[in-house]
Length: 435
Image (tube, rainbow, N blue to C red; front, side, top):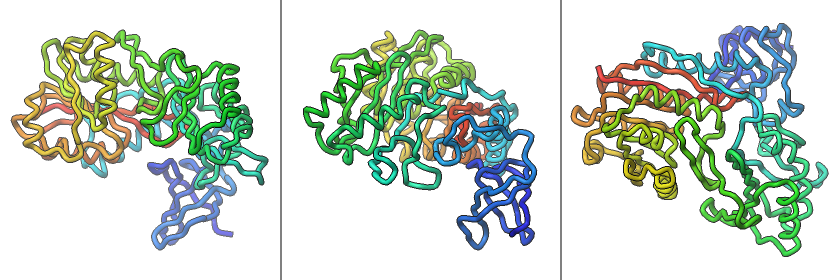
């Protein structure tokens, strides 16, 4: 038996980091900072190992009992064994470490974390479906940790309570369908008042299947959509004329209808607080011209316009550009908004210059970040202020290094938003100002 490992820290994926006596790094699933653990390696490389805790010799004071019975098997959550406040503190340290090691910089101010409810928060999710006779039939849920198998789970604590309790009913529903082997995924999308489940079907439903699905929707008060091919093919099935799926930002008197396959933030409560913080940092004024890069369906564009600024939104998806335009019209802001499709991952300095000068920017890219956008900034296109919302602290730090060390900005403030409690996912926001 190998000697116990002392966990020194958590890495960016939430794994415990330890070193063997020979200096080799070991990443330990399920271990927490400060613990002494025994672990079994499941992957060995020359410079590191990946392992799983087998026994906790000395537990952390922040270790708690996971609420979910399937935690450890299901891969949907990785941190339910860590106290909620300690989870947020760990994410703040990840952000600080990325700035220090990748960006070679430090924010002038670290902001207090943004966080909301930690259970039942997940308003969007993709549940895998498999018919596994050896396990009793149809399984519906997230993948098992480090596996492509579907976890054998009967509930979920991070899904809204009504949906979490529906998992056994969804298993029964699929098992009654003739296409049970041709239905690989169920996607959840929940607005403020409407729940939609999108069935990804590889073959059409039979008439008997249709009757079963209609009865399920009626019984549970949800909408069922069908998706025969790509996301654009998703369409309402039953009820065919139900109320629209939408979320709101009450503070800004805004409503955002959306299709269930379109991107929206998973955590509506934290999104509201994140928008409020972003608007405070941006401090948009009437008459200013502001760019919203990676604008999506207008989640930040419309609150900016509500304050009287003129907004130009840029997005790589034509469908989302159309949705943003519709939402601007719905909320009476079409006169202050314009939206255009643009590939922001290949943007050049001349292309940026052609957009005209903006007073301020809001940037909210996917995990790849916005490196080409920030590299394209020149003296005559540099906004006075940039608010950068990020779902990847490493790419934020990389882009921040260019803004600070090359483009003449100061990193005035940064902080995390706990968009995905009980996971290692780090959402963050940063404010840059021209020196």
